[in-house]
Each structure stands twice: as structure tokens, then as C-alpha cells.
Length: 391
Image (cartoon, rainbow, N blue to C red):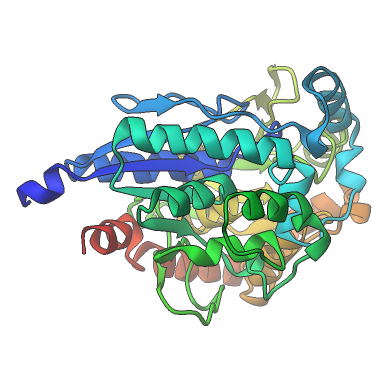
């Protein structure tokens, strides 16, 4: 590697939220560690929210945590956990990604002003040669003002052209005007400022027709699964947030698989740790290990969850709820015969058990998951990001 690349300094900034949303933070970790292995001097600017995990050997600069809907922090800190546990957030239909940014507080004018200042300070303190935005609007604005190259993660359903609501850009446009930057029709157009964008998917799933889009497939490196699924004895469940309330999920899953032959593992930060017979509950599990021994993955249709299941050749039951991106991913799984979809209103023990029995006994779904997993595995991964940043 050249001396120039050894001196290259990058700042990675993931989207923040009070909600459990592991995608941006986990991708941030994988990208940061990969670039660090290439002898780049990498730092992060991550809010220390519920998704934050310190990355060994990488300095983290301060970033503000957005409050849902821009509410005062004392109110949000009390109200939001209650809304999550009781399922209030699950009843809200989410039409577009800028609505997600608005609901999480990422488009609130006061928050934007503070967070852009925090990222700009981090860019200067780290002397960053580039900024990588993991769906973080403030990072895009800061990179523009500090005149450093910008790289972004992108997906098909988060495109302005796929779905947007212009009304959510009011606070953003106020700040852009103050910073003498061009106004936008929606917040999602800010991601188009990137010099290069990276899609952690395959074109078959997410056909984005724009320049400077690079498909990476899976960022997580896993060997091709050679596990005999007929010998698998585990069912994995992860619903993230905003789909099914934790209380309802636990009851349905417990009733669906009681007295069954499979070990059932539920990951949820909203439930107490539990080991009762074949049912196991914890805030998080080593999915990389458990999925290798699983016959079924029940999830909310989040990008990371969907890809992780496919990488381990595990067919899925997807319960996307009312969130646009998860519904899009659920259709991808269904159309490619790698699983089934259960609508939020139909999420009950009888239907879950019936779908599980059908999937586990269906070798076609396993073969479809295996094929898709191989496509994601061989699409370039982190090496695509490294190559294009170094180039």
C-alpha cells in the first residue's frame, strides 16, 4: 500500500435513533474495521444511543442523539420506551425513509443544527480526508461544508424517487438556506450529494439506476453454509422495533412453538432475559452462530436480518408491519421463494406455526435461500468499498 493511503483519514457517521435499529451501527462497525485493516486512520462520529457499541482501536467523536419528533429530551426519554413496549409505534404506518428521519428526530431543525456542527468539528479534529455517511443526513451536510469527499450507503426503497414526503424537509431547508446550500424537495435528495454510493445488496433485489452506485452484496464475511438443515434444531426470532410489540411477540412465539422439538431463541432489548425449557430470550445473541444451526428465521424484514438469514441459507418468515422498507424486503423474500410473509394483523400463534411447518418441510425454500445467499456472498462485499475509496 502506498504511503498516501497509509495516511488516508476517514470519518464514519451512522444514523442515530433512540429506537433499537442495529443496521446503521453494525454496518458502521464492519466498514470501520475493514478500512482500518487497510491501514487507514479511521474514526467514527457515533451518538452513544441504544445501538452504540465501542469499536476497539477506533476513536469515537461526540454526536448528539436525536429525540423522537424533536420532543424535549426529558419527555422523549420517558415516553418513547413506553410506546415501544406497548406497541404504539407499531401502529404507525411509515411510507418513506424521510418519514423515518422525521419521526426519529433526525430532521428537526435544532437537532440538525447541533449535529451538523458536531460532525464538522469531528472532521476538523480528525483531519478527515473523507466522510462516510451511513444514512446520516448531518454527515452529508457537514462533508459538503467542509469540502471533503462524501461516500454513502444507499438502498432502493430509501431513494427519493421510490417514496418521499416533501413536508418533512421544512427544518432541513431552513438550515440549508442558512448554510448557503441548495434546497431540496425531500431530505432523501441529500444522499445524492455523495461522490460514490454503496448498496449492501444485489441488483436483482435493488435495481437503482443512478451513476456511481456500487453493489456490495453482503458486508459480513461468512463461509458458504455446509450445514445439513435437516439436522438443524433452532428457530431464531428478531423483530427489531416498530413491527410487533415485544409483549405480543413473546406470547405468540411461546404459544406457537410450545411443546415443539425446536430450540427457540428470541432477541429483544425490550424483554427480560429468560430460559424456560426450549425458549430462550436475551437482548442479543450471536446470530452468526445460531443461524448456522437454524431451520427458520422469523424477523421484521430489516436489511441486515434478511441478508444474515440468506447468508446462512435459512428460509424466513417476515413480519414487516407498516414500514415501507421492510415491506419491500418482505416482497423480495416472497418473490424469490425464500420464505413467507405474515401481515402484522395476522400475527398469531396458529398462523406462525402453520407457516413454520410449511417452510421447514419445503426443500425448495431452503435451496432458494442457499442460492440467494451465494449471490450476496460473491457480490464484492467490503472489498468493493475499499477499492472505490482507495481509487
